[in-house]
View: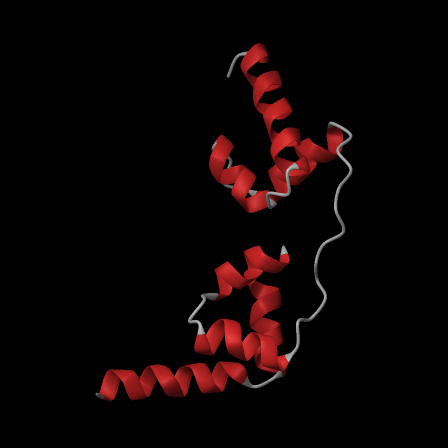
Length: 110
């Protein structure tokens, strides 16, 4: 990639980030698959990095998002700007992974 193209891409990344897009969304737009690469570029450019939204949303919210609404772990991770691993830990903490598995098994048996 040419230097001017990189500068333009990086400036666009900062603009997108300041508009509230997640690191994953920005990576998808500019063609970078690694969230950590997007993070490092923004950090180098002096962007005011938002604090990760790692606050546990609680059992009821997770139950609604994952089980009732059917959002995937990656979609929930995007909402809270955490990794899917963190969402998986939240689901395990509240024993919602077991509910998810049971629902999937029941659906398969229909």
